[in-house]
Length: 217
Image (tube, rainbow, N blue to C red; front, side):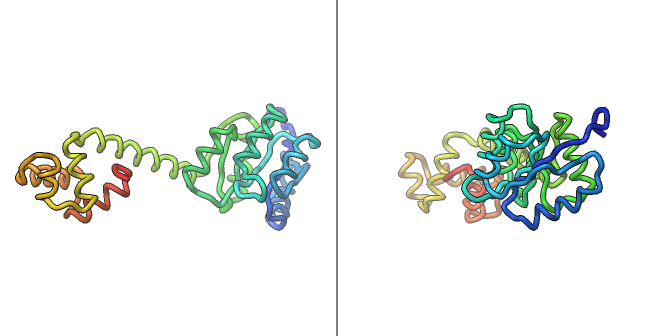
């Protein structure tokens, strides 16, 4: 519920006109929300930002000529007091985090229902952050993976990293021993330790995990 039952003036920026029409139909019965403007690309959005009196800008990520992240940054330069809510089909960490870092207060996916969208608009209008469940899970999972990778990197010794890189480059045990000036037995010991630490069943899986987790490039 908004303070003093103030009507929230909303502008929608999306390159799909049918989607904007759908949003209008979805929200037209909400007495607390009024759609006061719409725009169909980045430049049009910024033009409308300067001309339209509104409280919340609902912005899509993917638009012609300028993405929603850049639109958010420039819109806040024009009107620092407006609130911005991302509404997108993209459930990827880079889109969500970049939009929030740029100044948006919320991010919801286009598969959200009316009740959640209305709640997100209200939260954004009141200066509160809001993420839909799917977007929130994406950020949490990304954080967990990043922390896991950092822990794994910290747990590998410098010599183990050297052996891992040589394994990934296709060197044999004998070649690794010669390159690192250690015995073949020592190479095999490092290999076994790498398999245990990275929970890999064999060398192929070890290399796959290392690439997937970004431990080696």
